Length: 224
Image (cartoon, rainbow, N blue to C red; front, side, top):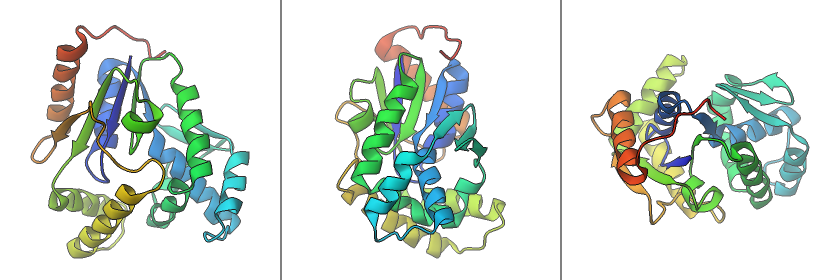
């Protein structure tokens, strides 16, 4: 069974997708981490962001693996490094690159294979897995998402104001929606879930209910 979760930044989709996969004992596929890994490699190699072909050439040589909750870049665990504000700011150069998106979507499909998977990102239900068994689009109000992102930054020791985070988020939303390849969009057959005021457990319970209502009993899984 394949379940996709798409949504804007700070909608809670990564946390929810991970928790849902754990609840169902499915494999969790964090596709955003893959683009972050490419951005990290670009930063480390000093790639000129205005030269998209150079970044695509670099990406084609990278070995990116998702192992449990770890992100491996050429065998190195970069799970923490890819979450820094610097990498976040640079990730759009990888995400907006058609050649990189094509390669990573192909890699995502290969990783999913015939396994039971919960995958999340911006284009999972529309581009990567249009034939998924169940699709969700998680969202929340701009203010709620900005508060979540601000809390994440503070936990990482970063300083920012609510207004700065909200403005950056609005700019990112516009870029994600206008992206020429794999833009952020709700699939026609996706169920939208607004997560304002809901805990992670409540959202997961809601998704499990909707999955069971749509496809019936969820098959037991050992993650394969």
